[in-house]
Length: 114
Image (cartoon, rainbow, N blue to C red; front, side, top):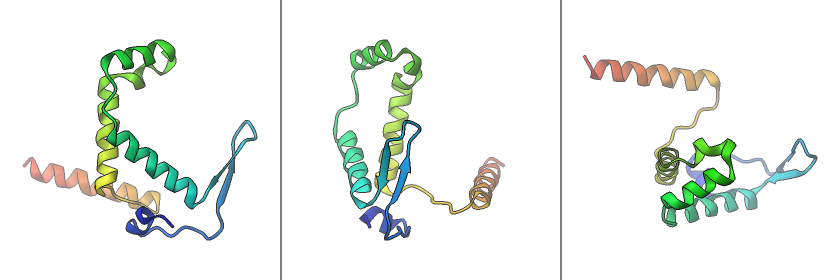
């Protein structure tokens, strides 16, 4: 189990989960997979943000994903990854728990504005 999963108090099955994609390729979600994902996030955070020229090139090469390659979206993704890295996240184990948290946040925000 990765250190991040331990910090989140999430237990991982001893048996890895294998997912079959629509094209019949498979992905196995095991410790190695999660370690690679964490390393990739660290690399993205360590790298400088893409330049305006790089973003323009990505929009040109991937016009159906142009919205993704805007400065606002890229900056938002970078902030989200920084929050994950810093542990500023919440974990929910059910839809009801998630919705209750949204209500709590909305009520807290409403109380703060009174």
